[in-house]
Length: 137
Image 1 (spheres, rainbow, N blue to C red):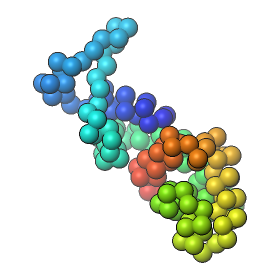
Image 2 (image 1 turned 135 degrees about the vertical axis):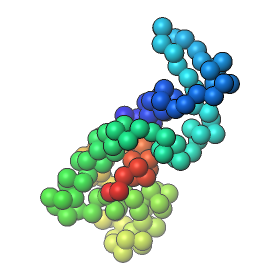
Image 3 (image 1 turned 30 degrees about the vertical axis):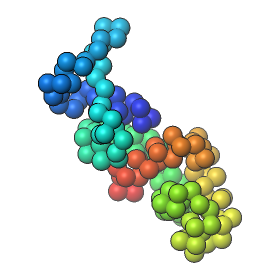
């Protein structure tokens, strides 16, 4: 599930205010409400996502990495977390993890191969950030 899909789910389950009810639109017979931009622009919205949806999102995105780490002790999840915390800087991530920059490059390439995602793409970085934020991994 991509971030946009998660926001759609959130829009359907979040309690409505009077102003939002007036702003509802009907598209192809389905009612669709927009999430407030202020809320949608914050990772704090994860607190409003139903637990099963959040668990499914994190399991599908991070599950292959957790399995690979368990089998190979590859440190993919900690590397991914550090890489994102370092804003995608290879050298800063390597310094933070006390490994060579090529180790970080290899691990991130494994993350991309296992998930089919591209960490040079902002949307994929956001998805990983949200999944890590919503998990205890």
